[in-house]
Length: 138
Image (tube, rainbow, N blue to C red):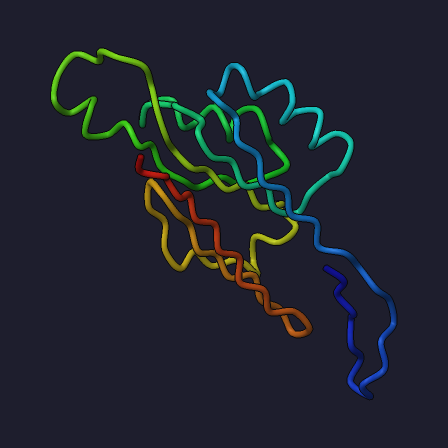
């Protein structure tokens, strides 16, 4: 997605690119090395993770590991944790990382365990990012 910086006279002075990456982690521990490599190679402005499988207490791992980004998201395991001892395999969860450079332009419209809506807006840019995790029912 290309973004032009418009001057007051309507001319553009440069073009920047908004880079967004979506990645299914298949668990935080399994997906973290690949996510780290994607950040290193592509330097995305927006990074959308699904299936991180973290409990609510461990969501802070994203903020600790990706310090150039601010993180928000949720765990799909909240009800499992609340009902007692954790059993079975972990599941779900979404997390969105936005570059700290875009913090002042970013607004979370809605965040749920299955989808996130984010608005990134500045004078010359308005982007809404929708991410929906759809399950198939057999």
